[in-house]
Image 1 (spheres, rainbow, N blue to C red):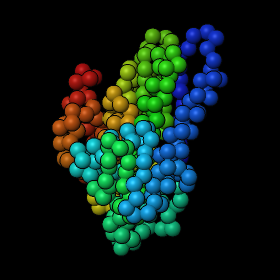
Image 2 (cartoon, rainbow, N blue to C red; image 1 turned 90 degrees about the vertical axis):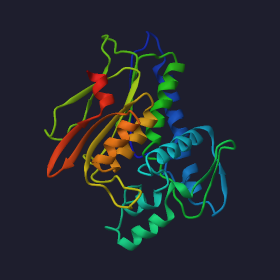
Image 3 (cartoon, rainbow, N blue to C red; image 1 turned 135 degrees about the horizontal axis):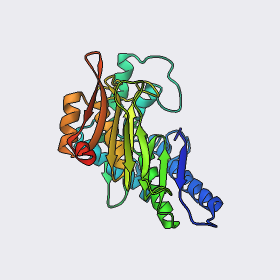
Length: 291
């Protein structure tokens, strides 16, 4: 998925760490083989090149991510959209760099081919219809899902105390060996706002923004990158949903972002560019958690 992973854990004496490492790698390899747009032979890539009108059967992991992605797409009014792969590729935010800044006509053509509403999802049969020319990109949700999967894997392996991270998305379970929770500092680029530390005790956090990779978040409704969201972090029981909601909220203008975050009772910390300054906004749900 174009990123790396880390797991910190507390384990009993004699625990087979090498075996656990092998199991983790195998689990991640399976998810990559299904949902990575960085792998030309992945199931996602095969869907993106499937003939118009064809149905593609999805395995349980892929199906769970698609179902969640489409739900967030609907609830966010399309601010989150798993079907903008053509736009992602056009702007050079995928595996291949762009030749240059795309023209308005090229953006319009990619926008015509994109959009979650073009997808037909048969949930009972776990199959997805390719309408023709549509390209999925699950980079705004699949890493979070992988974090959740590793958390469940660790529990099955008898590990109840761990911190999992994939590409900057974190989930903490149990406690550190010293009795503290798993502390994670939300990144605050420069000194634009006070540092913000969260205790990941049975909770996950995901951040979307442009402070690392530049302005790479695309508004699915316009086809152009957004420039107002420096960093939007969401805390949620599900790393997958934290990931998706952070992406959606980072797309929306300030007033719409606040309205959606409050309507969904999301725990959010956002650093937003406004009138030449950086503004920090903390949602009521997050304020209640840290009070």
